[in-house]
Image (cartoon, rainbow over all chains, first blue to last red; front, side):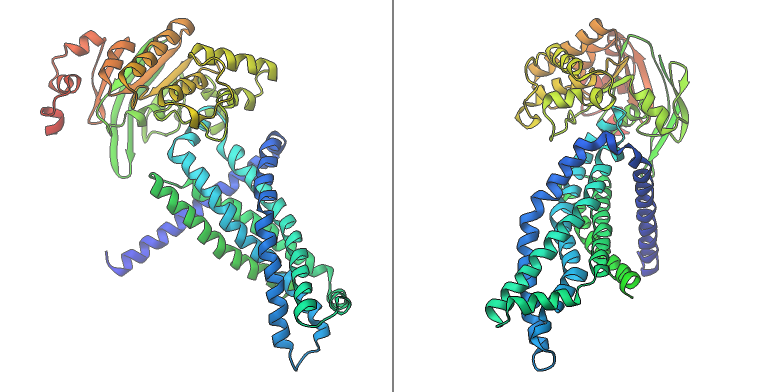
Length: 256
Length: 248
């Protein structure tokens, strides 16, 4: 295969994926009005995606907040008074680090498991079995994960923001000789509601990306265990890339 | 009655079905035999609308399903039950939830009635009281039985069996054959099975059709198939390595 035909093949594959993904999103949108039928499934997914992910998100956030404080202090040294540290940590966490790191952690934990679970269902004919029972797989499998994603990602992000700021505060007070008062005062001074809403808007988009890409790759699985492994990897890689692209897009719209 | 008329299908550039003509009469059990990879399961999936043919028609009680919208296919599928080759039980659900899934999703009956139906269907496949077991705790034969209970949960008019005895020991396989015969007798279900297990085909079938090179090359009663003049049929039913099928 020469280079041109290989590039052509890649372009066709890309268009194919975009087309199939668009069809899945269309089917998902058409199934959304049936969400009352899925309340039990949605609550199960929320438990898994949200509550069970909380320890991992909190652990990541605590250290992210601490690292942000240390590195901001390093950059402030001799240029900006340390009393502004709380504001810097707060801004960085609420606008960027909270939503993005939470999303990347959830893409690894939940996006991978969605792709693996649905992929296994695909190769063991469980999705065909749903179809033969006249149960729409998009309504039964995709919609609960999507709703759970767009609800639980912002919730996790709020927890992440809070714990990251606590981590930043702890490091500032214990290792950077700042008082709790000056940290919180600066945090309050620079806090803007738009920052929080911008960050939460990002997390809603990230929740949609993780759930849809996980489901799409699960449904697209072919072959056996190897196919499931490939789908899982692809779900995490594609979700992570799209999260970063969406982060830039939303940041440009809201804060640009 | 199911009529398959001049059905053609290409998959990944390869022609799998090259003009299938087949009639399955109400109340009979028709078994489609053929080598692995001949397209038996593909044909089965066309009958329930999981695949759309490139050309040709499938009529279920006179209704042409090949151009059906998804909503019409879902309406039609409620009249079918399917037993998958690997049983395709949902790992995350218990046996009882697997069997009752379609009933609950379609809200056909109140919950207490669904529980009663689930218990009745499980008893019918000799798995009384297995509601709370998980699929991972079951043997291959038990999984097939649960799959069968799930297939008959909605009291279908038609059941499709995809390799119902594959992977089972001969005794368990025979017990599944007995169940298939019993279901047909008790519930007057029309059944289509695909298999390459000749012992099963001879036992459960009213008629057997052989699929070879994308076409039905022979059809008849088990006795007629056993005594067929076709060399390909004889090679397959007697399980010989050399002959027109392998030379093809």
